[in-house]
Image (cartoon, one colour):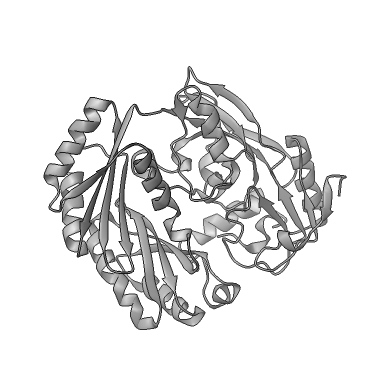
Length: 402
């Protein structure tokens, strides 16, 4: 190992497994050399950005090397005229948006984690309520530089929105959880900061009424920036609607949305609105428990909401559910590992629910259920890609989906 390496300590542990070594490259070349050395020596390697999601994935049997990207944290370029920016993988998302705001622009991705980095955000394809309007990090990515497991540095895409040069490696590594390559830097298309914003919050006592209002709003001309559902342990259903545009357009959309709702809505603006959405993003993670990510067809929203309480029969408690009305959300389960494992199996058996992934769980629970949900018809092609990108199988120490 080079002079930037050190022995792993307890604070570096992943699900209780302390890595033998930790290395912090300070340049793309150093990162590529670290991966080439790990491949040569067949060292199981985990990539770590801010460490905010390091516990996601299967529990590793052992970890030889953790590669930190904190030394690669520069804003490479902000082309504000083209509304694009390139940032290195270790740069925190919050810091990037602080820089972009100086030119009245932002990267429309929200994360529950204060120290989330650009690389980690792409690797997990993690996002929040802004997904409703702007999509996931995968959708905003237009260029990427990767350090391959064999030490090569590879670029794909470009620095302007219409550039389509090269293979779309950015979309391939988005959501790959560091199993294919290390992200060096990424280029995104940006959006102007909205001039005005307003949020409506409507409360219901059952999910079917909420689902009917969701359908009415989706069929209308109201363009929502965020469109979320929040369900508490007390079975109180909330519909959260944010509009962000010019002042006049925002007011008109808020008025039309209020007219379409069957339940009265409160209105939030300014600092209260910002604090409200920040809490919505953080809410599932604010307490202990098992966190499950699931998806559904938008038309099945009422069925999904009605089924949440049925999980109690396994002895666990669905204490919080937050999600996008388009069909993706997080469910927090409270209970012992056996009860939570049974509830997860139940969710995976339901035809109206898909892609049930366990994000936060104890090591014992991870031993009782596959966090990724087992094999599928995509497993063969995914493994072929893994062999192509990482022939020695060193990346992510068996923790990822492939």
